[in-house]
Image 1 (cartoon, helix red, strand yellow):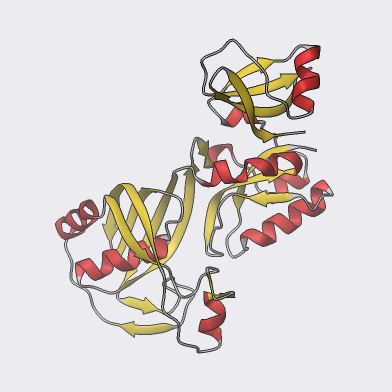
Image 2: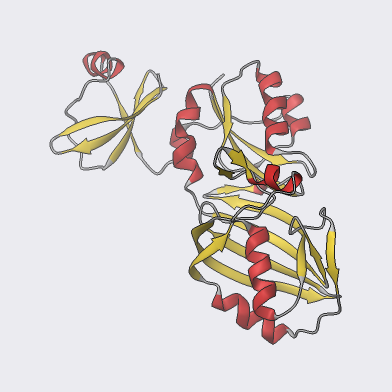
Length: 279
């Protein structure tokens, strides 16, 4: 079974937990996801199965949309509500203040990667340093915030919608927002609502997958590339990874034969050459 499936990740499950269950359901070890969600988070987890794991890097680069809740007045070590409370205090902030700060984060900025994350430093994951009470300098990552909107603000809880680039930690973004507001706060809920054109409304729970209620997607469903159907001679060339001539000006083409996706080829001068082989 080959394809891409949209999973609505369950709260308090790790992304790896969901993948392990899918490996059992589909009876394969060749499954990968395209962007880790924290255990507290739910929402879109794009999963590639068998030959479509070759598309993981393309899909990881897609823009992501989240709806996040911020609980003011609490600071934790993990930057979310599941962590140990480090500080509690009353916070005074206005809706106008929040909207102004949110607007200031739109664009590119250097984000500090959370201590409780799987990012590796010197071969060891950051959360391992945290659990061992070892000091480590937290790395930074340049990310882009495409859009950041206030959805609601009531009872010391802020709800925001954010569209962000690959590699953005929403917990860290929330920490930076709270710092700019001169308050303390922590992430209390997170939903990934979109990844690229993948929408949470088109995703499936693990239980639905177990019951056979799901649809597998192909490259043609997720990439805005034209399809080119190979003839017999072209098929033999592509099967061996050879360059071929196709009368087209498209930068990328999905090559098919008998309705089976074989490869993604990219234009190079007058020829098309292999980009991703799906054989």
